[in-house]
Length: 183
Ligand code: DAT
Image (cartoon, rainbow, N blue to C red; front, side):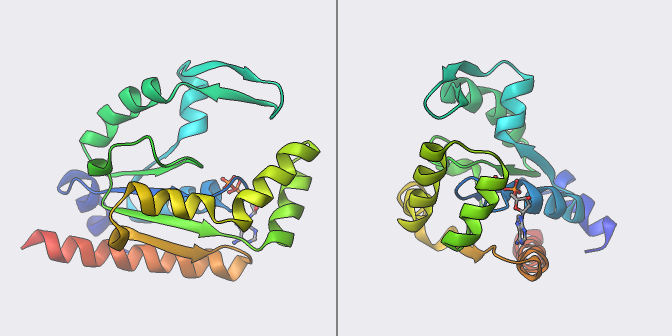
């Protein structure tokens, strides 16, 4: 995408994209790359929460901080209301449906995901629960229940080639969206 076109996304059109999926499927990796190539601002909810005191204690069992979803929605809602944002988070049901124009759910094969989460050092319970979450397509089901079915798209994220294919796909989607909304 040309940079002038990329700027148009942020300055003219209130476009917001949600990128979701289980931990380890590649949201942050793809979100960062897609955002930098499309002119959108990338917000990783976990990182934002860390920086802005949006946690409510710590979950010892899962070895992770507990996000206060209401405070996250208030904080990020302001930024999203202006548009031009690509949000990545493993939860997707607590944002207002109106904030997103499209939702991409990344999907990774069980053994690949297992290896990625093992490399990350997840404890056994966290590892098994997250792989099971992917086996049962929990995030995809959650996205379908939270947003209009036609704006939810599932993308594979197993190998490096998928990264490039997915980025191409979203850039094409953005171009189409701009065309449809510019006239
Ligand atoms: P998430 O943000 O969903 O938790 P991540 O972006 O941190 O996941 O990626 C987890 C790891 O997997 C990281 O080491 C990068 C790697 N990865 C992500 N997508 C990939 C892909 N399509 N092919 C190969 N490796 C990938």
